[in-house]
Length: 218
Image 1: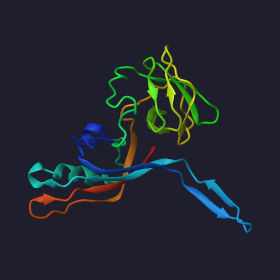
Image 2 (image 1 turned 135 degrees about the vertical axis):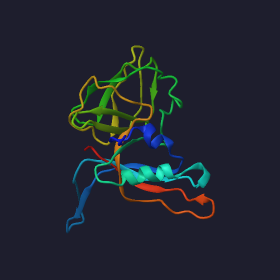
Image 3 (image 1 turned 180 degrees about the vertical axis):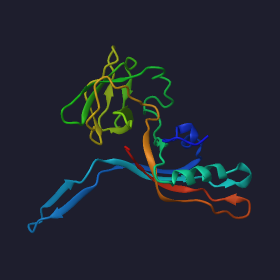
């Protein structure tokens, strides 16, 4: 059966033995300087997450060729996959996601500045820490995946509602109040930047593959 895109986590990303991961949002900007030395900066597009993944070296008997096959497929135009930041899978105060459990937090309000929001439906007293990641799906045809990092923390009150907190990058248009959010392994949809490094080996050891990626909303 042919693969459909984006590849789910269990079809690709969850199977990777990652040794090095770099992931950060990047906002394209134009920077100019006036004759008087004033720096002028202007955005040239929405911020997107991008980075690099390095996979561990493996013995040939471990069959690393499945990953090579999938990398080959993902190196085609139109291919994409879901991924999360392997360095930060859970909130700082809930290292395994056990406190959150089956709770499904939702966006309670969105500030007009596109930087701040409130959540509800959290466990009472649940703590969010600056640096935690939060994500959600919005829009359709195609579904878009948002990922944000908390700039300020928040704690849920007895009813599971938080105060206002700030996130980065900016919240994009189309997100609505009531949208459910992910605090455990929030994902983006990504594409591989041509061309990934794989396909070499010596003796009985295959060096780990590596690839660069960038978030896509298509």
